[in-house]
Amino acid sequence: MQITWYGHSCFLLTAENGFSILTDPCDKETGYALHDIVCDAVTVSHDHFDHNCLSSVAGSPQVIRTPGEHMAGDIPVTGFATFHDTQLGAQRGANIVYRYKIDGLTLVHLGDLGHMLDDDSAAAIGQVDVLFAPIGGKFTIDHRLASAIAEKLNPHVFIPMHYKTPALHFDVDGLEPLLQANAKRRVHYLNTNTCSLTRENLGGSRLLILDYKR
Image (cartoon, rainbow, N blue to C red):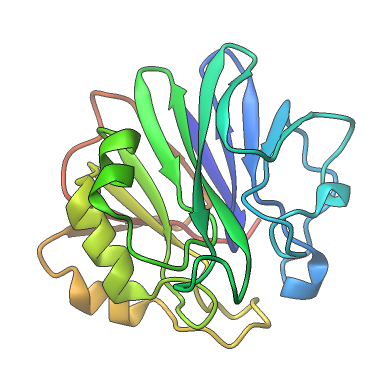
């Protein structure tokens, strides 16, 4: 399968058969000017402008925006109800963590998770191959909690998102604190926004840094 990062929390997940799912498309006010992205389905973790901008998407894809079991084409997608803050949603509302099973891999996108995952939630999510986790703090979990969740879920590959880049207009933390907190992980920088992952090339304990530039 192929993963393409468009910035912030927006990834295009493309299966070997060509079916693609877009995660949390963001409005241009974030600094990432997304437009006319072609995909078959979209998942929305919550209704904030930097995660639900369907006008960035071409055509009329299937939209998934609720917890529970879904099918996007032949891809099982499961949404887990969580919160955007540490006060059961009182500050920023609800959030959905999505699990995708694509080409024999299990991928988990935490959306704008705002709290530690408890043991029951981690058990429900199960084994994870690729974890997409926000690390910027202030509006989401920071690098410390993201690292703790990665320890709990134990993914082969950890891909950070929702952090400060030259394009982003938000005042959130950058990448460096995460790198310092994950010295035991092998860090792989890619000079592209796209990578291909298979069961054979997953490796283990990898921190994969994609370039947001299109």
